[in-house]
Image (cartoon, rainbow, N blue to C red; front, side, top):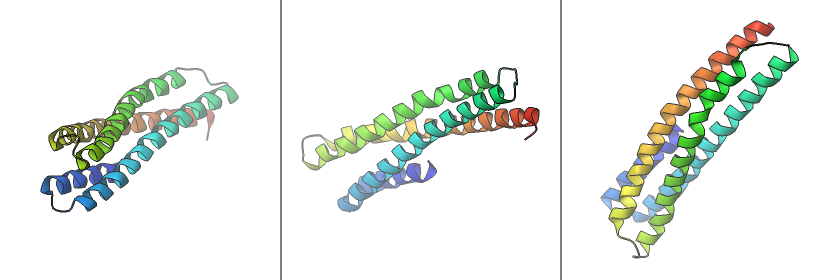
Length: 146
């Protein structure tokens, strides 16, 4: 996630300079793909963690609200990560419109700034969800003796 975010910032700086558009486009495409992959993998990882906790609780007859807590921890990730991916893809797609002269560069730039802001928010929420899910998994592991 941090590599994708750094790539988006680097892409923005290259775009603001305006000197090396081919590098701006290449970095933009690469950073967009890395960012999409990172958020998708984060969502799948949190789904897997929830399933693992649910299965461990069922297998070892553990009672408690662990599954509910892990579901609550991961819930905000899905909305913010989806928004971050959508805005990032929109910025990348609209970049082609700027290149062809259909769209003014300022529109693409504003959406790109929004993509960076959304990705920063997503990283913050994803780290919080990872921390919370790790704590819950540790608690369940203590209960089942793993």
